[in-house]
Each structure stands twice: as structure tokens, then as C-alpha cells.
Length: 355
Image (cartoon, one colour):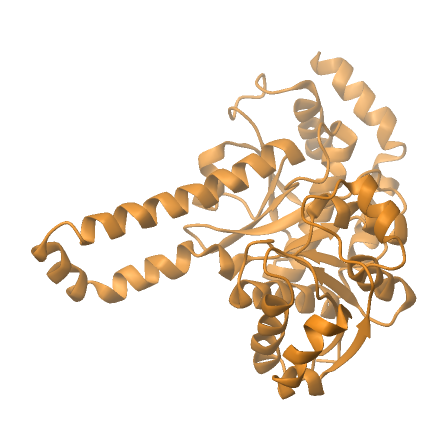
């Protein structure tokens, strides 16, 4: 694999530089050929680099004056952190070619706002989407959008599907990924007009996609399809619900094990099973949402993760950068435009037909 430079927002996340440097160390152990371009407050980051020669030896550090707060509004972050914040400069490094991808655990709204201003959306794409890996019974699936676009129309949902399948081909190595639209039922008569119209467009076009049709909420965990497409409002709620359910199950297990002596004995015999369950349900292992639809790569790490979770986000960043995901999405969008012509007109026809 060619050497890849990853720009890191050293000040993002709930715990800031400590998690970023710990994650960079764990990722570099797995991938010794990667390099880091780290932006942040010298007073906070330099001592961590001095204590970690592995990361320091693979990094270039740039001091920044401003750190975007986790509670900052996107407009406020743009005004205060434009060109001077660690978040802005990490994304700008992708635009200028100093890095192939940027990773931040910072404020999602601010990160998306800055990414859109700096990188701009790709041709033929109206709205970006956040795509994340989701653990399933069969392995993993990709779910998008996880919070970037609220209330997309049929045309934008089709664009999400094309971007999602390109990502799936990169991550899963599948030539024709299966794609499903998240809905309240599998019947064609159910759902909003935009979802039903998007389904009709995907059925009618001969795209390099194996369109499954509608999927329901429980199909996400089943791994029914490789890519689940939904709007950012629904996707973000589904993600947070899944994370909360995982913590709830873990709480019940701990509570049950501590309830009696025999339960503790049973845990000792089934320790490997419980460890496997813990690993499969650990959100840190699938951390890292990719911003799709921009002229450059940005990966969002969960703000409350630890070093292991941040390293997982770096792993995702490395994979999409090495696979040249932006170029693959652009190629697939060109195919979509050739097949559909004016996608807006197709979407309007289908929405009128299902209304």
C-alpha cells in the first residue's frame, strides 16, 4: 500500500488530544506506513508527542490557535474557527493535497459545515451523507445517512444509494452490493412519497446495484442488505437507539452475573462467549462515519470514544483513501446521469405517480 497521510483534528472530541494520540499510536502499530499531520494546541499536544516517540516519528505537527467546541453551533464554528481552528486546517489539508483524508472526533455539525465550505459537493450530488459501518448477524452493513441531510427528496435518496454502493464495493469487495431503502414495511404502497419514488427510480435504472427494495428496521441487524439507505433524521435516531440498546444489554448481563454465586460460576465457564458478545457489540470496533459526496475525504469519529475507537476511525480513513473512494463515487454518478438523464425530472415523475 502506498504511503498515506492522514490529517488529524487534535482538539476534537470529549477527551481531546489524549484520545487522538492514543488512537494514532494504535493505528500506526497496525499500519506502520501511514503518516499523520496533526493540528492542535502545542501546549496540550506536544507533551503527548514527546511521550510517544512512535507517533511523533510518523507525524508533522502544526500549532493552531482555535479549537471548535462540542457545543458550538455550525455557524458559530465557521465564524470563530475559519482558517484558524484545528478542525478547519485538518480539512483544508485534504483540499491542498497535504493529506489524503481528515479525521475528527469533533462537533458533527461544525465538521460537516466546514467540510462543505472547504471541499464543496461533487458534481451531480446535491447533499452529502454520513455513511457508517453497522455490525450485523452476517458481518457488517453500511447505513447512510446518519445525520447530514434531513428530509431528502427522491433524487437525493437515489444519490445516497449510488454513493453507498460505491463505498460498499470499496469496503466489502462486492461487485454488485445489495441496496435497500429503509421503510415502515416491505409493501410498495407504504412509506413517504420520496421513499416510494426513489424505489421506483432504482428499480427502473440498470445501475451496478442489486436493488433489494424496501427493508425494515430489524433488517439492519439481520444484515439483509449490504447498504441501507435512509434520511439523516431516521438514520441518526436508529444509530443512537442501537448504541443505547447495546449498553442496556451489557448492563443487564453484568447485573445478572452479579446476582448470585451460581451465575458467577456460569460466567467463568462461558467467559469466551461473553467476550465474543462484548466485542461484537462494542461500537468502538465500527467507529468512523465517512462523509460521502464531497470533493475530498473526511471521517467523523464518535466524540465520546477512546483510543481504540479513534484508531478504528483511522482504519476507515486509511481504507477509503487507499481505495480512492471519491473517484469511484464520481464514476458511478456519471453512470447514473447517463442512464437517468435529468434525475430531477425522473424524481418528479415518480413522486407524481405515487402521490
